[in-house]
Image 1: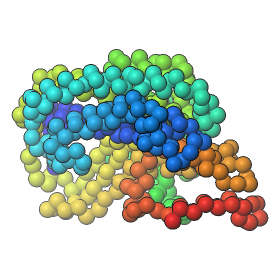
Image 2 (image 1 turned 90 degrees about the horizontal axis):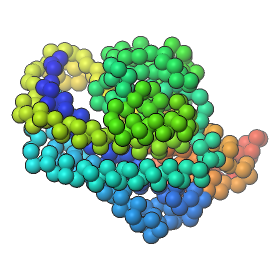
Image 3 (image 1 turned 45 degrees about the horizontal axis):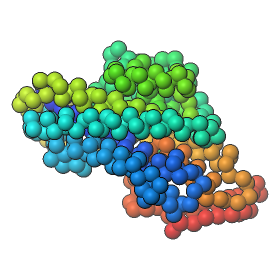
Image 4 (image 1 turned 30 degrees about the horizontal axis):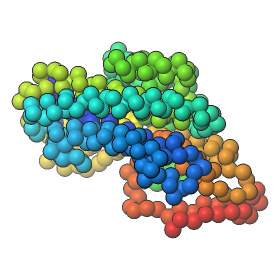
Length: 394
């Protein structure tokens, strides 16, 4: 459409985006990873889930449900839908913000922020129990990529891409979405439907980089909100300016949730948020468009070509799990070599392999177009190819 959307629509889109970050990060931390962190990596798999947590740590589970509910209600209040809302439309959004919805979100915001604070305090208190996992969960040096604003601050909705090397040096800054093909290559892998993006100037596979919460905090100079910046400062004091261990995706996720909650408050406190001019109308003014934003899991790039009537004729998507493909594979290899004893497949060892994947919070069904639950078949092979042990889930 090649139009500039109204300023209020920009704010409303970011507001819903922050709600999405809150609910997604809460789901990842509380429902998918907290069972490992609270019940133990080697605990009974029948109890190592949210129901087991409910028995042993009911207050934490209630906090997790409340935080995710808050994020979902932000989305629902704006869009009248919680899942795949159609409120965000070409040119802006299809309806202004109801003042009653704004007031309700502001009323509930302090409770959500209290949950985020308690959760950060809890997580920082258990970190020392996972020294072995921290040292082996995908801590090999890589590049990092994340969106920043013009001053280098964290930007989730509308920024440009920054790449840094493993030491934190900026190698490319303010890359526009339209330039992604000159910077990002996509290698085809013989064992996966998911391609492997890499940083072109370095080449494949050396140009491996990571995206998502860990990468965003590594590339950004600051978050830009008071509480999140305070937590970011402590995070860096604990683990360094560049945090390499993928175990700390969890930590970074909680800091980002804090940031998103603060941004929700700031956006709702702006009088312009209630303006009723929320959509620009136009037809097909360009036959090609590229968009870029930060999904909770990392950088999302959409590239479309259309015909004169606007029908899509070609598309390319690089989603966060695609960007992280090489890093996830290498992390699995590192954890497997460290924890699997070479003789038998023990559940706790395999759970750590799963746990390092969960740290990235991958959207594998989106990235590989898988339907349903794939059958899992794991084999442990001797150097001569003999099967020493195997597990099947079919």
